Length: 309
Image (cartoon, rainbow, N blue to C red; front, side, top):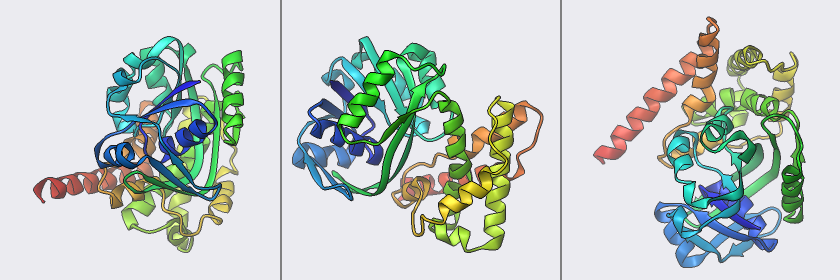
């Protein structure tokens, strides 16, 4: 299978490398020092599942790859529109797109441009980071849950499951993928924001009674927003999320990693979306509104500091 990885950061590079090692023809689209290192030395994956060194095609130009059978769309949410338009050279007659992004609205934004029949939504469960340019550190999990936006399970979906499985990527087809995305947002909205703002790992939030209570209030707003969108999340999901988080210890969420690496923050996709959905239904989201405002200020200040240094 010809596969293009749009956005070869930690997530895209890890899964792309697994697919390449299984014999697929994989091209990686990246930029900056990370791209330069991969072009020079290849892509290195230091993983709990075994280390890899991949020699493949690395480029900043999608047109250099040509039409693909599958596109792994792994860019940050704030780059979605620009990157989605850049997919044109990769799109063939039967090309499909699997989004592997944070948030809940990315797949629909891709579908508006390329069609829902070409777009699958994916939810990733993985602990990985760019250790340094050209090198990915993978320390836990590595599962993809995916599905078609209308809930059907067609032949193309089954083929993708087979392709991922042959690459030893744990995967699961869901007929309720939108619900799965909202379930993940229940974790991402509080923990990404709080860990980033406090520059602390997950355990620091759990060790504080007041911060845990704040996280739960954030989760309840996510659950209310999901209900407004017709997605019912179980009332016990906050307690389930806290139990799951107890096993993460010193894990740093992606937003904290982005802060430490001087990258923009995904506060709109994780907290702004909750505020916006509830606002459309004339309801309030005081916790997510506050987290969004603080993260936006933090993000703008960091960008100003970077531009002046």
